[in-house]
Length: 253
Image (cartoon, rainbow, N blue to C red; front, side, top):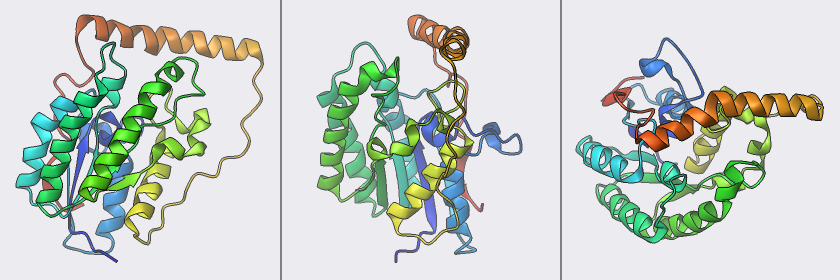
């Protein structure tokens, strides 16, 4: 089994840890990557961890801001998820996007690191984001090809049916909840082949909701999340404007 000592996490809100609040941590977030780092650190007192991910980043921003910075840290493990925010934009050229992603993954694997990539989640059950399902499916197939070409490992989020439960998601239904992040940490550690103590989610059946309760929740979600989110798209602003990486340098956990 491979032992990892220098882990760098790259990407957007998914990897920064949005949806898993912890006021004691940088940016006020924990997230699955922190949990993975904690498990790896428990195996090696010299383990170091950096997290360069920033919410709202598009793929080209991740590539421009994070790839060279990661390579300069000489990691032996890199996790990266990028492209999710691009999928939600009105204009989306998937072939060009993944071609740029491919070049970035080549740079990471060339430095000798084990690289872990992610497919996008299957949004088919979601009444709003479900309209993106076709885009996600095409993106995922191309990402799998990139992983095969460069020997990267894949965490196949598309096939994780446990995320069909709303309790795995934060109030905004876009970012994972604390339970969702914990579950993702276990999934990543499994792909790495690392023995760990992180339990996968085992949720009891959800409480029954009437149609009226569902409508009220949907209207509240649209008011508090969807409309402001659309407004940022129209204004060309991002939730990540002014946000800095929470762990810009390798350090002990």
